[in-house]
Length: 319
Ligand code: AHG
Ligand code: MN
Ligand code: MN
Image (cartoon, rainbow, N blue to C red):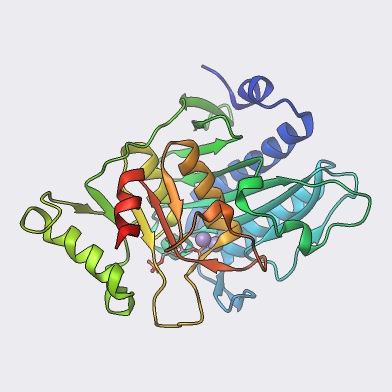
């Protein structure tokens, strides 16, 4: 049974990248304990403010953001952080080699129903003598040196890649450390399971409506096979299911707000999950392009997301 630190010592050559991954995941263990206390700790409900994207923050969005921010800014390996819950990037040490972008709590609407949530992170390498700026973060996702998430479910799991495949770890709560439990995860190119918020159907493009209609038509339609549907309402949970048993996850563009290209955030959600899916042999696209090729224009940029089983992503985009 390999612990996370043993795994990092053999998988990651840079000591400072090992340090970034350890600090991040150690803080996620603390977030996991806070979540387990739930109502008893008085940490559920709304914080009473909005983030820069106009979304209401829950107390746990703020608490987990502050925990990660505090721990990462104290690490000499960190050059700067960017968070879904911070208006601007926060520069740390000019000697630090790594930039980290994170969604401290993904799926936070699930908190109140005691359902799955997670933390998603994306790491870039950037050096220089000047304090980091937002421009340093605006690198395409293919430049990520590591990406992953911690899923707070019935067990707490860490899933990440440093560019050599995807590995899964399970938190041993007694020892307080992650143990490698699944190596080199691969996503089957074919699937019969999809995840999309169907309540937005009438707002999608015609092509997306046609594609999903054909999935729902099952054996009686052009696809000639039945599909199952699942929706965790936390991307981290839906992506975890896809890494475990396959499928396709879609958060498409919709015309509710035609100026928004999508709901999910490029830097905190689409890029890290895109890297994981590609490392597992799957694909991650917007309606038109590979997510990891997108040149970001701002840290809070949103994109449409189609990711999962390679052949099914191709099929979806062919509409
Ligand atoms: P966050 O909690 O970080 O704002 O992200 C929520 C996102 C994503 O995790 C999930 O897939 C999606 O919102 C759920 O959207 P619906 O409200 O349409 O179900
Ligand atoms: Mn999120
Ligand atoms: Mn979030």
